Image (tube, rainbow, N blue to C red; front, side, top):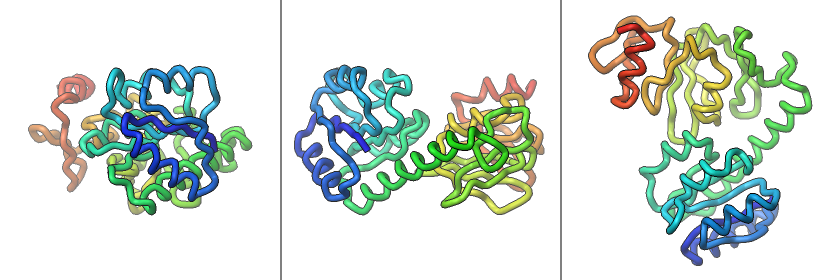
Length: 242
């Protein structure tokens, strides 16, 4: 696995380099204290994984990943500011490591990348067939999601809501216990029909067919109450014709 490290603190780069060397399966191609130089390097080289700080001069890690437009498959943020975590996951970052980074936590993040690489390889090899690949067509009544070491088939119509946790999405359905999956909101939304599933909060997606009522700033689904985010309120009310 080919990676680069971006951080304006040389000591932070040294720590991640030593962790990568200890693991052995990650090749550090280069490291940068300047994010603009890193961006130029990425545009001219093939990279599997980027470790990037967020608060840097000239361009932030958030701005960097937005400008890459999918050129790097996997991205892990390393920063001293945990408040950026949700925005990082919304941008499809695999993980978010808070400094000082413990080695076991670093290993966990790298293992997530490896799991995602295996899942993507398997999906490509079977061409998203009904034999177990990830179905992207919204015409299907089901999707497959990776949970632990298996791909689980989920009936779209049974999904009540989807909750964003720190590292995972939690899918709540009527047919089974909640399912944890290592996905971003952007990924799960691409699999679901837009006319049925709407984002109502930075941490929630709901199935409009399951809504029981609307109470002030909350959506009620049977005995569960889902908050409506202030920035989502006008869109939600418009979609629900309120």
